[in-house]
Length: 71
Length: 458
Image 1 (tube, one colour):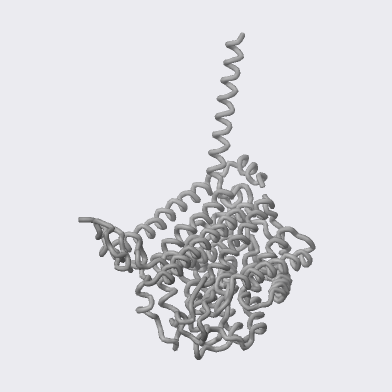
Image 2 (tube, rainbow over the protein chains, first blue to last red; image 1 turned 180 degrees about the vertical axis):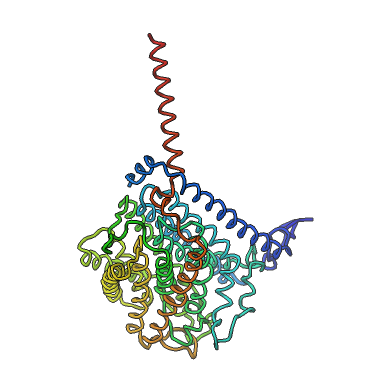
C-alpha cells in the first residue's frame, strides 16, 4: 500500500510513469488550484480597495509634504 | 528512454533548459531593480510588490491554461484548422505529464522556460505603469499578457507548426515580436487609458522628466536583464536533435542545435550576434542620446531586441548594424509619441520593447528575404510582407488591442487607477507612517533610558 503507486523501487524505470501521490485526482486538484487562484484575487482586491479608501482620507498635510519631498 | 545515447540526449536537454531557466530568473531580478530605481521613494514597496507578485500569478495560470494554449493553438485562426485538442491533451493541467513523471523529463523544464518568457512579457508592461496603477488591475493584465495573449502569439508564430510560419513565412527566432512587440503594444494600450503620472506634463503640455531616484539601481538592473536575456537566447534553442527526429527536409546524419522552428543554428552563432547587437545598440544609443545614461543602457537592450528576429542567421556585423539602426528609430519615435500623444511610459518599455520588436521584424523580412522559415515542406519563405503582417498581429492585434480593451473596462469600473490623493502621498503611505512613528518611538525610548542612566550615575 503506497500513495504513489509503488512501495519499492525494484522496478524497470522504463515502465514507470507518474509517481506523485493520489494519482487519478488530477482534475480535482485542478479545481482546487483554480479556486485558490481566483479566491486570492478576490481577497487582494477587497483589501486593496479598503486600503486605498483609507489612504485617500488619511492625508495629514504635514506628513504628505514630507513624503512628497522624499524623492 | 531506450538506449544510452537517447538517455544522454534527454538528460542533457533537461539540464540545458534547467540552466537557462535559472539564468532567466535574473531578468525578473533586473526588472524589479529597474522599476524600484525608477520609482520615487514613496512608492518603493508597492512597486516591488507589484512586480514580485507577477511571479506566482503568472506561474499558476500558465500551469492552468497557458501551456495548453501553446500546444493547442498553433492553427487556431479562422481557416487554419482550429484548436488542436489532441495536440494539447498532454499539457492540460490534469495530464499526467504535468507532474512528477519518470517517463517525461522534458515537459517540466520546457514549460518553465516558456513560463520565464511569460514573466518577462508581464514585467515589461508592469514597468510602464508604475506609481499610478492599482496592483489588482496590473495583476489581471499580467495574467492576460503572460498566460493568454503572448502564448497565443507564440503558438501562431513561434511554434514549428504555427500558421504564421506556414502561411506568412514569419521568422522571429529570438522573439523580437512574440515577446517584445506584443508586450510593448500591450503596455501602450494600457497607458493610453491609464494616463500619465501627476505632474508628468506641464499645463502647456510640455513633458517633464521624472528622473529615477537611484540611477545605480537602474544600471545594475539592466545589466541583470542583459545577463538573463543571454540565458533567454539559449532557452529559445533546441540544444541537440537529429535530422531523423526533425523528420523534415534536412538530409544526412549530422545532429544539430535548432531554433524554435527546428531550423538549424548554433549557440556560437547566437553568441556572436547577441554581443554584437548589444554593442551596436549601446554605441548608437550613446550617440543619439548624447551620452544619456538611461538611454544608453536601454539602447543596448533595444539593440539586441531589434536584431533578435534574425539573430540565428545574421552575420555579427549585420547584427551590430541592425541593432544600431533600430535604436535610432526607437529613440526618435519615443519622444515623438510622448510629445504628440502625451503618453507617460515611465521606463520607456513601449519604445525599448515594442518599437524595437516591430522594427526588428520588418528589417528581418528584408535581410532574410527568401530564406526558409522552416525545415518542413510547403512552408512560405521569409519575406517582408509576412514580417510586416506579423508585426501588426504581434504589436496591434494581440498586444495593443487586448491591453487597451481590458484597461478601458477597468477604467469604466473605476478599478484601474489609484486616487489622486494617494498618488501624491505615495502608495507606501501606511508603511512610511508606521516607519516614521516606530522610529520616533524607539528614539524617544532610547533618550529616556540615557537620561535615566545619567540620573542614576549622579
